[in-house]
Length: 257
Image (cartoon, rainbow, N blue to C red; front, side):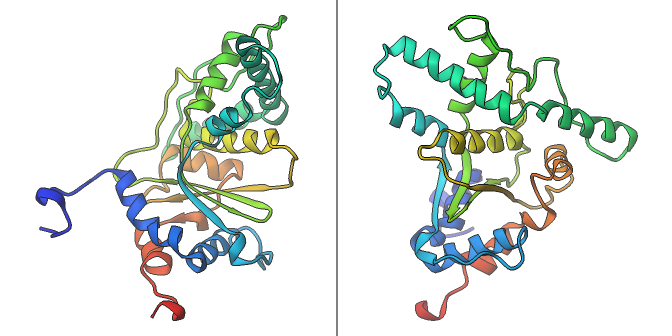
């Protein structure tokens, strides 16, 4: 029995494991900096230079929801009209930047069907399809997309100059999938949400999204395979819990010894 367990009951929630593993990175700028450089360097070698004071980390990030709240009322329109206009704006961004997203997923599914050991993704006809209405009122799919984004939470988000690193942590549960949603798969939905937030920010800044996954034995799951296939994730950024703890969370820097 671990003496740190309340009433001797192990807390098995992923949020708890994520919080206690990444807490040292929240409080220590050097640890955040080293973690960010590790993730970025798996895409770029050498990693672009930046100061550790410019690296920020947040857990359980609902960036789209909070951005909408931050900008509410800025247009001067009525609440109902303002929301409808924002839904249309978000849908337009999605159609512009992700017009070929469904095709990419379909190509992965086609590949999975030809390889017996390749895990498959479920896909319904209206998944990732956002129709444009002919009026000022949002189409049903535009409203569903907006609701998907409002409710999307990313476990670990790290910002560094020119980069937004988005991470999903998994311990025992599998990746979320909801075929009734427009954005049906968790990892893909999180990437889309982060990208749309960047497109909506004013003034716009050139920022690249890099995805990572923290978990053990997750590489074989369909969503991870699909992300790898689409180039939204690299194998080096699939990190085990022990690697995070041993390389970044538990290790003391010279200044802390």
